[in-house]
Amino acid sequence: LVGLEIWSNRDKINIKPDVAITLMSFGEWRQNVLLPRKRNDYAQLLTRIQFKETISGLTYRGSICSPIASVAVILDYDNKTSLVASIMAHELGHTLGIGHDRGSCNCTAGPCVMSPEINDEPVYEFSSCSVKEHQMYLLSDRPHC
Image 1 (cartoon, one colour):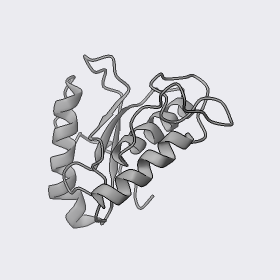
Image 2 (image 1 turned 90 degrees about the horizontal axis):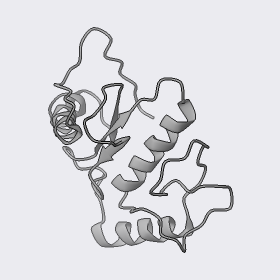
Image 3 (image 1 turned 90 degrees about the vertical axis):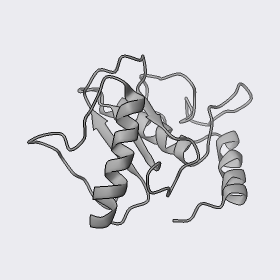
């Protein structure tokens, strides 16, 4: 973590009920405002705006270190800190090139970070499938951070 910014007076972007529009707007803000001010590889926007889609988070898959696309939007569930942390880790996984786990993927301690379903119990680890997929992403796409 290189920084935390809290928008208490007003939103710095136009946050819409359409999560894809909000994600695009946040990416533009990161590229044009945040990056010139603070070097970072990835940014997440946590919001309590209820999106029209039934979705807890959205990111661009395999976009780590892209100036405009290395972002995620996360729905902040007010009283469920461990759930929000799990969603943050899940969306970071997508940004790192990892898709959802399949039936053959498993973890030693409960549900895996990249499970396609949201669990009320916290997630602690990436599956062996996720680790392999991330390694393949690093070798093929070679992101530049």
